[in-house]
Amino acid sequence: MRPNNRPNDQLRDISLTTGVNPHAEGSCLIKFGLTEVLCTASVQEKVPQWLKNKGQGWITAEYGMLPRATADRKDREATKGKQEGRTLEIQRLVGRSLRSVCDLKAIDGLTIWLDCDVLVADGGTRTAAITGAYVALALALAELNRKKRLKGAVLRDRVAAISCGVMEHGVVLDMDYTEDSSALADANFVMAGNGDWIELQMSAEQKPISGHDFARMQEMASRGIMELFSLQARALELAS
Image: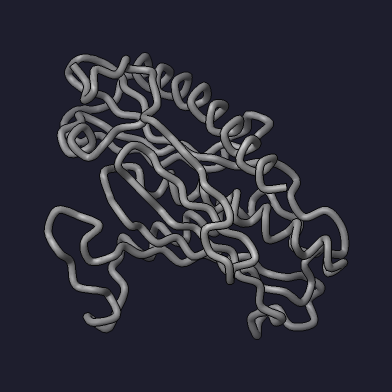
């Protein structure tokens, strides 16, 4: 039986709260069960050196976990003097996922930073970061549009992400830490609003993943992400 007696294909309780940071052009606190990630979108009036005079802007992400996001305190990476490999991998994933649905030419001359800070970690932090960062980005772009700073429509589609896993009792959707740490296999799915897949991260922990289980994971992920799209749309509607 799953934690909280959830059916295998049910998401955790999810909430998206916008406007939590008064300084950021866009912000969203997203909660997947106990997992909480604060996502902010910040606009800079410049682009990286390698993009100067190229006729486009840039969207990038940073990801981090607060010291007590986990059961035991972890040192800040700034204290260690370098970022961990996992941190770099996740923030690159967030940046790629959001850029895939954007027209960067429409933000020529601008860089939008998506900062995803994990307040509490209980599994699914990267999928929560992607899902929340989309909302923060959409809010920032709406602000830029009001200021007539855009050269056209930026967002071509929505994006959200969810995890799936293979447990002894079958395929499950949206794993918490207890499930993720004991899964036979796990995967993170990133999907666009039109149903196309942006990225898939999948690995077998204890045995290879069968075609049947993979098909089930993909089906569950698709339906779960469609629910996330509805929650995103509702959050943005309330913020407008």
